[in-house]
Image (cartoon, rainbow, N blue to C red; front, side, top):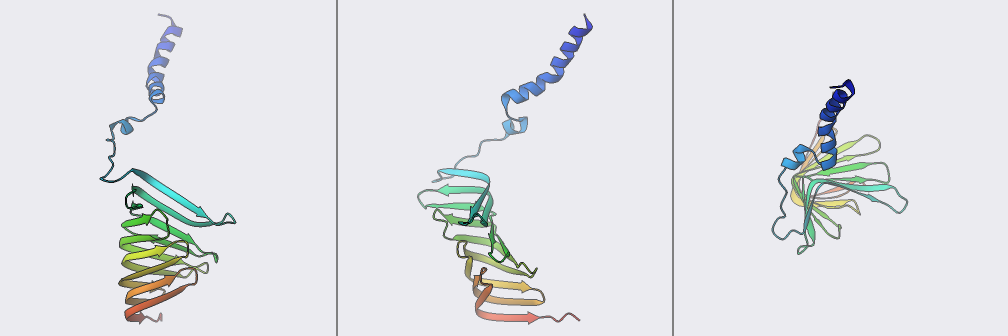
Length: 188
């Protein structure tokens, strides 16, 4: 057998699997993954989604991301798994809200979040405020949030516990509704 022919056979053996992989267009791990099924009443689902919303001047206002979104047309809403919603303030602040579950109506006026809801509001000057609760209704377009559930607010050396809250992340206002208790620690 000639050297050229031997080289050709070796090249075919080495390149064959690569060309076969490219030809099929899917990795072996993708072939072994079972297809995901639609849930009862669901018309579509999406995985690893990220949506960005811009204002009229082209500035980023909001991002929505979730590992799984399930849409239900009869309810005109989507269910979100571990959603993350980021709101960008006109003053340079960033408010990040996460939860275990969420529901987003098709009109996107409000997001209903539940399960270990955490809101991290970071001002452009570096002040960070955390809001912790179990349920929260977030109005992304107006940057408002509300809950009737117990809530804990942490900022610098201050802690507030209350039942119920309304907040404006754009105006940096927070109203605690009832059973308010506060703790302020001096740093000495």
